[in-house]
Image 1 (cartoon, one colour):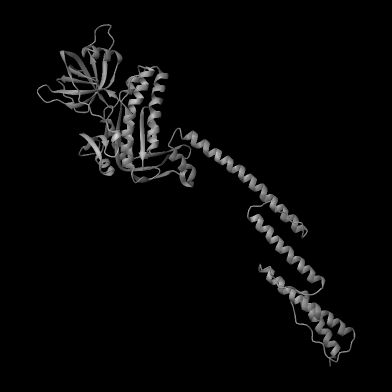
Image 2 (image 1 turned 135 degrees about the horizontal axis):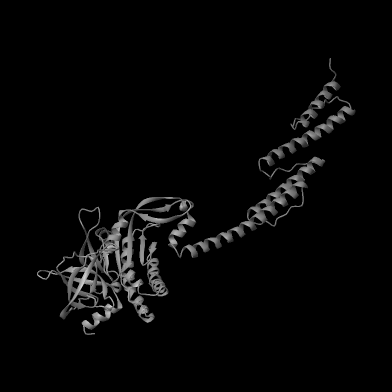
Length: 475
């Protein structure tokens, strides 16, 4: 039979075992008749430790769960004092961590030994990383500014912004979207280039383009292409525009009106006067990044682009021609002139386009229409013409006569019929040693029978030809 002393020793041994594995147990019950001996003293000491360890264990559990407001643990044992110190340090560390999280990377700790060194090293690394990020961010801003300023000279700011802001901006591909497309061209510029010095050509063209580009950007247009003297502008891409057609209308009116100031400057510089035709059309087209991974551009493709080019080709200098779909998209308020039928490949019926003269909401941008007063020549002037098909001249010469002249226009009669909007070169009969007198013109109206004549609008006139025409008109 086990004695009381042996049983108590077993209980003490079990309690110490549970303490060793971190488990809190209830104090050992001391028999009342147990004498004041070494066993009673040992049980008293163990019980005191068990009580304090139980509170200590409970506090550790709460701290492990993030609760630092633990209840006070009474006692004077070293373990309790260590717990108090640990509790205080953890609360202080929490405050320090909150300061770091709010951006104060100057925080340091000087307690808890190796942990303090690790914490201080972490804050220093965070500080260094933040400084590095600030430098990289500044470099990125400088890079983006350089891209905008540099590539913005070659393409639209909107396109550059899309490439910078959208991760997918540089991916190849496109989407179908309804756009309003504006296309311009200088009349007779190719022939003019042949008569000017290269430096004068570039200076004249840059002066003209600077004025036009500023207006285009003011109206939210995206410059897709500048090919020589021609400009291709998009309204509605890459940024969608609910009022794309209206913007396009206002832009074209401003551009034609600005040509007066451009030509005043040309006169001061000794450059020739220039005239611009504009086509405006609305329709669906595919827009997106075209090309390859090595070289690509934001562009537009589709029948709508081809139709816009065709509409523009029917214009004369100073004229804006708009398509039926543009008229519908732009809404009320347009001031329109003559109807012009535009024929295009792949279309069974011609487009009934209209000349745009202004808009009721922008009365200051109206384009004046002047009726030409022709001077009937005392003696018809013999000449011949050659048809221009695209960029090529036909070889056949067709005899004709000039019967009347006006500013920038002429009346011509020929046995060879000409279709309206035909492009031709007119040359006077040459004498030996005489400079060739020629002009480029577009047929803008057919005269009724019996003369079978037509009205020509000059697109480019050589200086020698202009002097001769002035003499014929008595200037």
